[in-house]
Amino acid sequence: MTPTAVPYADPPAHDCVIVVPYAQVEGYSEQHWNDVSEIIASGVRAAGRTSTNARDAESTGRLTQSSLDVISSARCAIFDLSTISPNSMFEVGFRISTGFPLLIVTDGQKPLLFDVAHFSYIIYPKSLQYRETQEFIDVLAKKLRDQNYTEVVTTGEKRMVRLDRSTPEYVEIAAAYEQAIQAAERDNELEDREGVLRGLRFGQALFARAELKVVEFKVGIWMTVDYACEKAVEGYASTALGALGALILSFARKTLHINLSI
Image 1 (tube, rainbow, N blue to C red):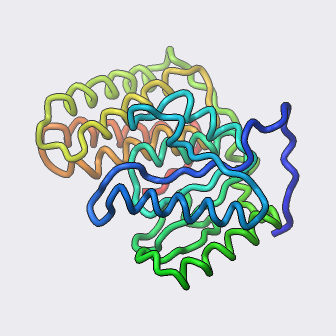
Image 2 (tube, rainbow, N blue to C red; image 1 turned 90 degrees about the vertical axis):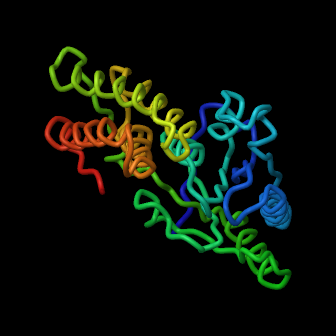
Image 3 (cartoon, rainbow, N blue to C red; image 1 turned 120 degrees about the vertical axis):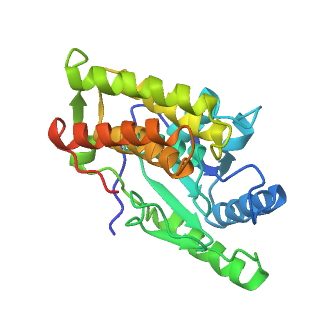
């Protein structure tokens, strides 16, 4: 694709920001992610550019305003989406909402989520073997030199939607959010309960705004609820989360005229 110049109101605070998972998950050690970060940084250096690791802005392993500032202010953001977590969804959605470009990398072991599956991406070997890793570095460097980024926000995605907080539909969803959060807090069987709660509260905060972009609704609200429902296929929280998801789907289609993939 032909690179598109992105107008910044102020000079970007960072050139390339690298965003990879930071904690051990099934099949991946913390050292693995450190190695992946360094490999991506090697590709950035090979392109004659500089990089910042978003995790360096975090002190607790949680999303912070500092890390979000880095993600939103960089000229290019490089996301590793080999695994999916609430944090990675928030960060990608946050970057998308700025309208600035990004690059996605993955080890290709799992398909990308539906909302980003149509974006171009680069695959690196999960084994991190030298020859294949070097090929990845070369491809990444070329994309960065050519500024061949993924321009992710279409005119429709940038469209603002206004939420009338006085309508019965809005009040019903607001109440359902609170019920879902309370149910998740009490459900000890809920997988990744902390992540689910973080996502629900993030979506609740977005929904409390008077207006937001379509992409923020899709990623910040719907994807976080969809993730929560996936982690609560049975148990105390599943009914409340399922009800919240159904209300959001209906609200999106009938009131906002947004079709959400399920």
